[in-house]
Image (cartoon, rainbow, N blue to C red; front, side):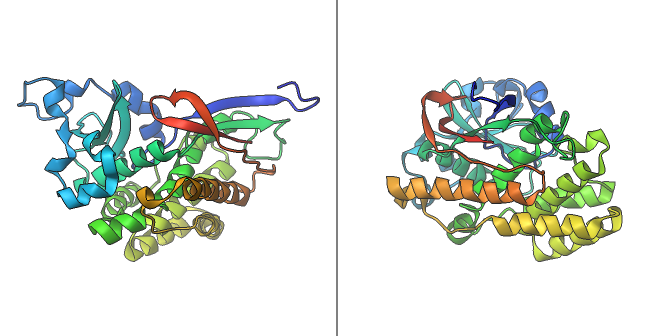
Length: 322
């Protein structure tokens, strides 16, 4: 960057949003597992990939689809058997066509489709991708030191940015469609409780206790924001039982969830100024979340910048997070 003694230690671009259960399996194994679309749905259908893309009108009424404007005619649904059990769904763009991939094993297909559709809508309205960097040297005392930074940026940070995005549409989905993430989180976290550990975002592979604490706190925040009251009690009990510093993990998780402001918004009704304010506020929430993680470094979030072309056919704005 050439700014005197300010040195770029590491820079990477994270394409956000990514949807569903956010764990190491979701982020690192999915590209290898993802098969061609013609392998992913309705094995009895031999009409080719296009026939396997199902229009949204098969799942929603005309009035419901009006909430999404022109996007409702552009997004197609694919039930993708190649998705790992830890991933309920995913929003992708293939050949210029936005898709809502749905795991056939997901507990609530309707919510998953709505969820992925909302991520596509956020992208179209200008939700930014993050250019994540470190300026200067990471302190040896920070849990981000050594190899932890890129692992955090590709895993837990993605989930945290996901939670911020979800906070801007989950309340609307509940009010308008009577649909919530509770059933998806119920199935996910009951599986974790049964197996005796949370799925990893990659950090815990280091064996460092601080990394386990951070990942546990992200899981706690996820359940506090998107799980039922009953599930929250079960997960908090699980954490206190399975973490030697369970109270600290719970406390950090609560700090994360409290730093994210949930809103009930009709995104298509927002003008450009309101949308700009929305995305700025989302980034402020992310900055507050990162500051609450105690990484021993200051957190700076830049301004939104338009891109000359869409990043990965999705985001047309970006922002630097340092």
